[in-house]
Image (cartoon, rainbow, N blue to C red; front, side):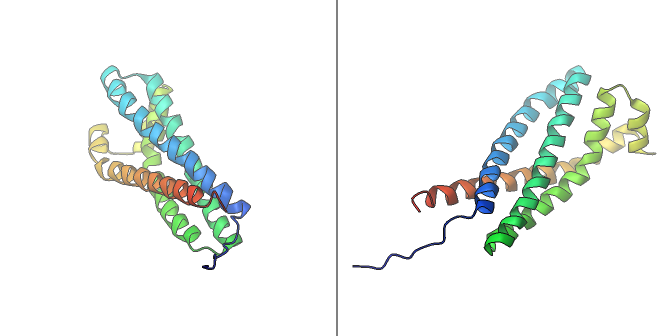
Length: 166
């Protein structure tokens, strides 16, 4: 008869991190879907309401990833499992990408709220056309960050499913 290796039970910090990682995964998928629907309509109709909605969706996503970053490092601190550091580093990079994209979403929010002067101050001396053309890099980084968050969510699902019987 073989020996069964007994694993340590999941800590509360890990359960919280993994559970919210799944929630962030779902929210990120929803953000991507809503963005795919709203952005074309928003640019076609120049809808200020949709600009505000899209900005708020991004701000919630940004806050969610920031909280998740803290939870990843807290999970490591409480359990000494290096996965928490790895996940935390990925989330820090995602937060940096979100900071880079924050300016665009602030401009979009202020334009949606009819605060064009504030939006122009944020853009600076660059024309709106030049500003928008310079966003391809940050947008690709945002997309890559969202994919990374989705992968972390999938890893969390796999870990929780694997450990359900423990």
